[in-house]
Image (tube, rainbow, N blue to C red):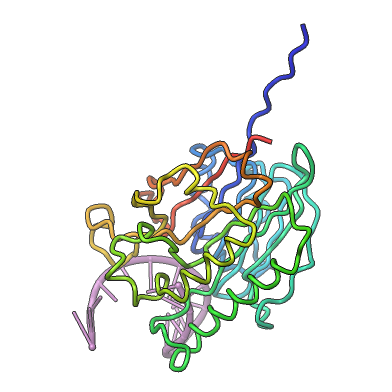
Length: 274
DNA sequence: ATGGTTGAGCGTCAA
């Protein structure tokens, strides 16, 4: 009798790689562990003319889109499945600073709009009157929130990236001690959750209770990141409400923090049963 | 309050 084969879930991963050229040799380890169909990178730190296209296509990602600049920022989307460009979004805060890419994935069941964000870190002082970088971060957040809110027909979308905000109490090692630390201040966490509530589901917390500690980043500035365990969950995968039922699994690849010459962020992956 | 470390690319700046 004919029985439809159960389709393998679509896996979408995100990683702040903190220099693509330096850490290209680590990508096979990520692929072995997560088997992603789509991999979104942030902080590639490579201008487009120097992007290692041959290196990523050799890993099986035939469909690649990237936007980089010299020294800082930079995002890329590497995919095993075809996609079309999605170029409706504005130049956030009018800076041309390579913090966002979007594509329309040719996914089972219909196209999926995929957004890859690298939100400004925001500097050290959480006060926009003395720290312009914090103002930029808040402006970016507000602009993105408004832009998505205006897209009243948004459906079948996935939003990933280094959002540089740990929104929940247990997304940081000490809620009380981080309330005045950039990434966990109330204006940031409330802003991020307001954006999320306007149509998105947290694809990782769907599987992990809110009262359980969960991190995706550990600073380089600790002697022993694992024993001190002063982490924050800065990297996220959100899906629109209509895809919430397709969420099948999540993985935060904590082992990656111990790889040779590791990034300070680890990959985060979500499976969608489409 | 400060410092701790890493990357880009050669000054420091950004994180």
